[in-house]
Image 1 (cartoon, rainbow, N blue to C red):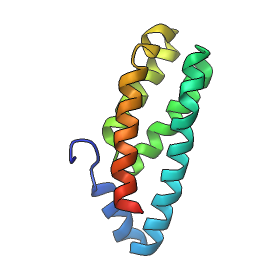
Image 2: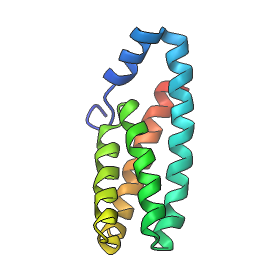
Image 3: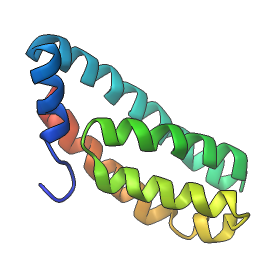
Length: 113
């Protein structure tokens, strides 16, 4: 589990903001992540590079803020492929990305809810 989510980010928020405000903030980020993950299948299905890139860009920074560093890195990889016009290559990663996103969100929900 430690290789999927690093708790240092959330612990840093708790130290800086206090436990309750940090958890409330982290929960808001989690809801945002869930919404972006939910948008991705339609963007991939449409082969819409701009929509894919927009979703994964927003997802990457918020995932990193919550310590989901593998998810953030995978999102940045897909973003770079879309930026380079390699939508088919990005789409080839959709299943693995979806599985990693589901696993990351499950771990984060377990900690934050």
